Amino acid sequence: MKKRSWWIYILIFIVSQLAAVGITMGATLIQGREAVSSETVAIGALCTANVLAILLWLLLHPKDLTWQRTMSGIRSPKGIRTKLSFGLALPVIMLVNLIQEAFFPDIPDLVGDELMKTIIFNPAGLLTVALIGPVCEELLFRGGVQHCIQQRYASQGPGVAIGLSAVLFCAIHMNPAQMPAAFILGIVLGFAYWWTDSLIAPVCIHVFNNSFACALGMISPDDNFIQFLGGTQGAVITAVVCVFWLYLMVYLIRREMRKSTEIG
Image 1 (spheres, rainbow, N blue to C red):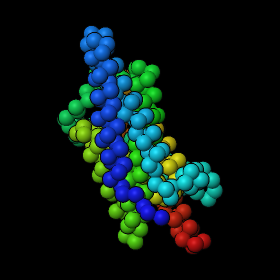
Image 2: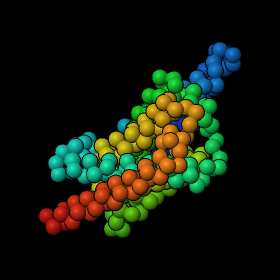
Image 3: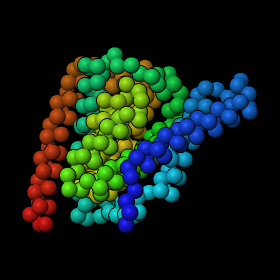
């Protein structure tokens, strides 16, 4: 069976983004500039791009990525891998946010807090950011890019596929403030996909990450994560808990890997 090239899924992402912008701008011109707000245009473009990319992925997804295989993450013995992958991701997400806010607060943000607040307080925008976007990106970058690279370079181990998909995942965000966290998250998502052999774990992790950011923005729109935790003391306590939590997850994952090797 001929395997697809990974770059096809990057092309799908780019084409869907350009098409969405074109469609939204055309609709704006037809309706009149004053009839449509910039926030509506942004939300419309974002939602259209993600839906279009999902549809294109469904047409061009890797032939050896079957739905039975994709759903295998919720069945034993891989169910425990899905849970451990999710458990690993939670402290990583918290720590990355804390580190970036504490030590790299001045990284340029091209999106801007005001636009992001407007998007997440809109039902369509919230649904797109918290659910549709994560599903779309996991289909393309784990179920497309990483899957194809894993198949093509299987003899080199999972590191090449995980690393390259994370780099590309980071690059497509094109926002300096998001890129460091996107790269680290991409590594975790890539590991989860490789280890569970399913899209269930990475989709759930990605949905949680985006939903957590949206919830924080809605609950405490004028504060960052450290301020939400009550300042430096709360941030330090949270960081310590996350480090121990991360250590425990790494220990449990390594034990599960050894167990699987012994059984195999």
